[in-house]
Image (cartoon, rainbow, N blue to C red; front, side, top):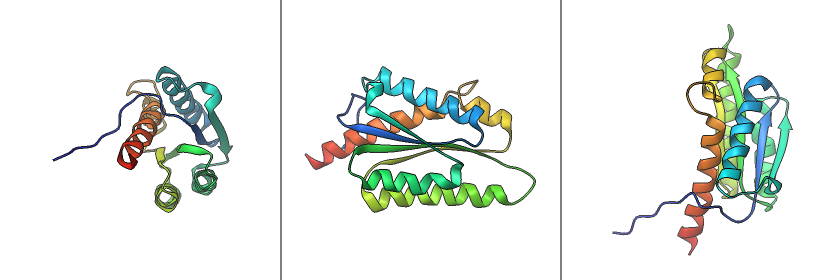
Length: 155
């Protein structure tokens, strides 16, 4: 029985990164981890296009537009939603996740969910490179692997 998986070699093409300006302390660290991971895996920075949006709720619209453009091998979505005292968190986190998923399903382009959903600022900072790795870096790896996997399946 054949088994297929992607690898981490540098794929051809451009990559779009959609990042939320809200919680910029965290999202800028996610972007740095994402960019550095692409470069370490052989994707030069001049093949990365960064698009800043106001918040995580706005990410799916831009992710879909970029994926539909045909210019990108993958779109990476970076944001941070931290639970507060109201139900706002549930709406933003849920709709951001659903919208990112729909962008990928509708276009057939890998659209990677790198939006942190945490209970506290400390958890968010830890996941943006302080203690628990960098989820922006993980999103870049997922994009590389998915692009390579799709290429293998098409061959």
